[in-house]
Image (tube, rainbow, N blue to C red; front, side, top):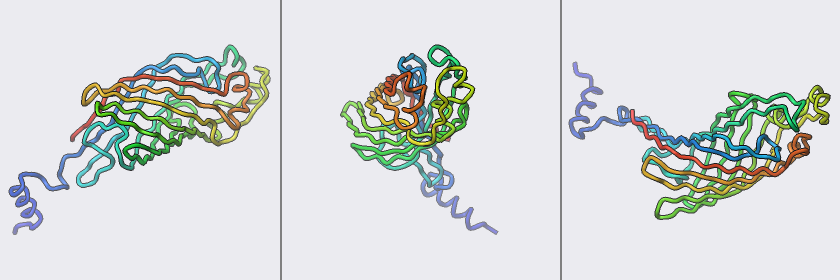
Length: 255
């Protein structure tokens, strides 16, 4: 006895020459960026240092008839709504020089996810990250961008930013324990969760080929709230300037 489902499947393949949606090709599109960054030595530092920078950007996922984002090709700030990857590396902070007496803070890797809504000329987004390595707290950012696109592929963006963190994050980077206070001479301080900075970013992306591009940005942040009141920041600076440049590789995997 013939199975009607199998008969229908074979007939569809013979008629169209393709597999039906349930057996169609799956795709994953994302981008990786690596480069160099000039940034404050730590949150609230008055000096800067040069170090590596990296970024992961999720573009789209297609499985069968379901699709999230875009898998058609690398499009910076592709219009639409959806998920995006969120990643940040925070370098180690040493308890020396003006921080003498404070405990060392290990390097952290924050991983998470974000939501965005993007039109041709503007975007709003929100990211939430977890310190999977390091501080083990939650941190995130909300922001908006004005977007300008040229016919050559150059994309410029700029807009406001606001960063926040939970209590564990705040205590890790802005807190001073009782023992640290005795050793360092700084006042003991226990910050609360909340928004710790507001700022502005300007950036650009220039494609070099369908799979490669150059990205760069300059960002200004001003620490606020409990972060600004921290003895660590008060002996440093509330104003934080970051500049970075990197090479981006776009991946479009079919499987």
